[in-house]
Length: 509
Image 1 (tube, rainbow, N blue to C red):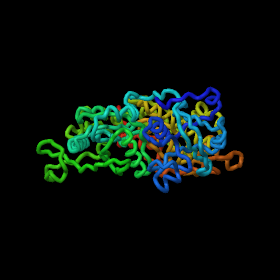
Image 2: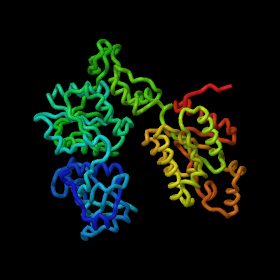
Image 3: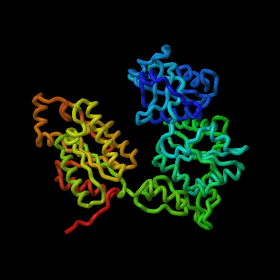
Image 4: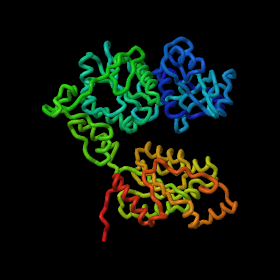
């Protein structure tokens, strides 16, 4: 690429490295390919103040919203914009490979432990990694491919079903425009699909579109919908779009006209999609909602052809197989002595007898010995232990296995991280709170831990001198003080059957 750059060996060797968060990595890639022009890098304080006051960068160039990079304060303290030898920060991808160099022009404190850094970015190496590289074209490469005149842009952040395809076709005919479909690949799509599955599903609808140019763009969504819409309009304009078709809440920006399509419905008189109000109520069938689509896929039912082209339906079924065929993490949490390990072993035995999927039991004590040896019982070490368990379980589930975990996992944020990792792997996550009361757990005290903690011989004991944050998001709660272990295992299995994660089986004689 034109902004590829090779740092001197001594600078690359000595410069600190940092892996930005996923949204920041997406911004970095957009900066490097020129989709954020005229912005040359992450903003400095002067840029941020100018943008907030007059929607312009410090040099006067129009720009709508902040694009920033935050790093740990300890890292920023080692950078000095005035010292050429100490102002380079190497930015790496999630695997630690260098992606770009940030020439730090400004550094400032944002909050406790977090600093902002700004400056120009330049690519390191060729940047050619990840699926569908042939579609990851820069604006400079795409614009010459577009015909002169109007260009209708569509940001396909979800699969294109028949109603969306009808809206696109109508807008193209109305404008007499060429169609440019931009597929966001900076993160999972709105429908929960990984980027590569979203690309495949959009390509599966290509024969239902007007003549079109398709490109993969490293866009990710921001929490602020207004900022998100303004940046998407800016990126679309960089690719040569003159009109943008809204697929949700979309604001105008970067000189683009944004088209907000009317709602379509299926007319069962002739099988066509028309404006909703033009169809008599008795002949009108509304488009499926995303939860309805997800429910059909989760239960293994085909998407109806009146709503979804067969090729698109096939790709979605591949990407989101029925729950009974998908990977799953069952995460049991509770106090020591609550019975979670015994329930986990019983559940693993039942599922192994069924033989539908590979089953891996990640028992807390075994993990402590094999995976997390050397970790203590501080909050940081406990969180790291749970994170390791969550990562391993998510990888098991990514490959369609079932990972059963049973750590104490006393902190809500660590449990939430484990859930996020499983969902990011395309798997399910079922949180089971084994809510056996503390007094019952103390009476059992098979390992003698509570007695030692009460005697002051052991510190950091969950439930005694260290807190247990009871889950508010548990999918199932069981209490072994008023049920047997077999009943608890049956309760978990019943929940998995009812929610479709495990196929019900008749008891063998």
